[in-house]
Amino acid sequence: MLDRYTGVLLFAGLGCFGLAFVLSAVYPWMITDGTRPEASIEAVATPVTTEFKQLKESYPVAFAQAFPRADECLTDQELVDVAADDPRRTASDGAWGAAHAVALRAGRDEYVGQVCWHCHSQFVRPVANEAVRFGRVRSAADDNNELQRPVLWGTRRVGPDLTNEGGRRSNDWHVAHFWDPEGTSPDSVMPRYTWFFRDGFQVVRGIDPELAARQGLSSEREYAYPGVFETQAEAEAELARIRESADPNLKAETARLRVVPAKGPDGDGLAIIAYLQWLGTWDASEREETNQ
Ligand code: HEC
Image (tube, protein in one colour):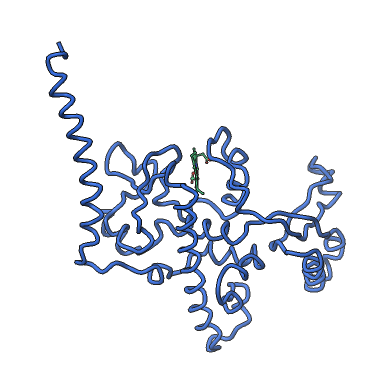
């Protein structure tokens, strides 16, 4: 009986396809029509996310090589010793903004270049309870910035929507996930991104043997300190620094420090993580308005 309508159905199907095609051209054009100025990457790079600041603490060497004015970016830890009226504070704010802007641009370029958009959407629609799965529904305001050129809505959803990815996972989770997605997400079909990593050296501390015995943990267990260094000598210097600054009561602890070969994200790895941690964090006031 449907046979009689095949022509109509074909026409309707093609019509829907055509409509979607036209809309995905018209909508981006509408949001860039000039009624609201498009925000530059520099503008959306502030406020700087907490996660970006943590990246500098965790990977100071790769951070310094990848981003400008890294030495002026003071971590929260470093700010503790800087007086409230010290000009380094203001310089630090500016430096963080500049470094973040470079990271976001490079991260967006990686997102495009590594074809992340082929498996991930950045478009939470107001249908089918998508907001329950992926968070806040996407608004046109989200797209009105330079990082959304080209508009990265994606083509399909093999993996989850990333509109609101910022702050959902820790940096460490992202590092582990890029190294081996199946390590954090069993049965994941996301490919490994091992080229976001480089070899280096890191300080680790062996577990307290008594604690290990008491809790039934392996006595081989080691805990990494932040910082993946390029050369063994740099890591040894860091080890010496940790030993020196440690509480004298912790002699037994610092005796168990050693330097081991390690892998850490390189500049591209840091940039893509910075980008993911930024997604959905921009313009909180706009967010509240569109949420109602
Ligand atoms: C072949 C498809 C595919 C490609 C390509 C891909 N992913 Fe994924 N991604 C997935 C799948 C499937 C998951 C869900 C399982 C998991 O967590 O690994 C996922 C999960 C994620 C998550 C975790 C989201 C969350 O909070 O649960 C992030 C972040 C992510 N991908 C980022 C990226 C980035 C960045 C790229 C490009 C460098 C990328 N993906 C490329 C398929 C893909």
